[in-house]
Image 1 (cartoon, rainbow, N blue to C red):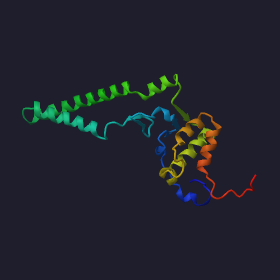
Image 2 (cartoon, rainbow, N blue to C red):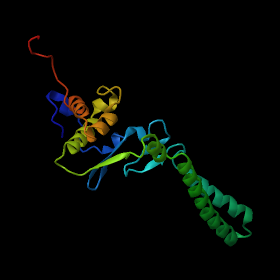
Image 3 (tube, rainbow, N blue to C red):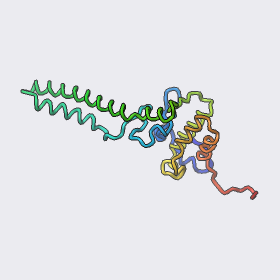
Image 4 (tube, rainbow, N blue to C red):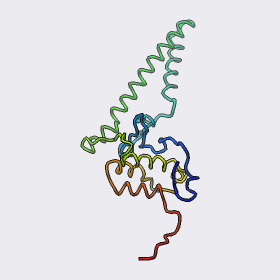
Length: 197
């Protein structure tokens, strides 16, 4: 639970998953943080296991296409119910292979990892954070909690959506980014009561 001052703790969603922040993934041993530049301007997103997923196809369309190939091959090539089922099964297997081949070709041709490595001269596009006592771990926890608040989801906090970039920079060691995440996670709740300088 967040310890925001004032009533902001009401804003926090308890036990929220890290998938609200698209470049932060929970792993068995901690967190994996991805550089937002990896998926910027692409048709890919990072799923909750850290796998890049091509988002140009609507969900289920590949399975529907495979089943359609099976049905069409069964109807066109089958002569009797047994042969129709056999040809439908063969069509599903062939359709699955063709779908896998097509998606592999798309990922090979339009690979965000390859473009990122080319653009950054081979720099890693993700960092594993496993040391629970480290500053990077603390930043991941802060970013995960901040991304789970209604204020962040609605855009009242971090309107420009800089949190993924700040988290990446903070995990790589930027003190400024760490301070900025801390400022977003713990905003001041009232007017500045200090005397003017």
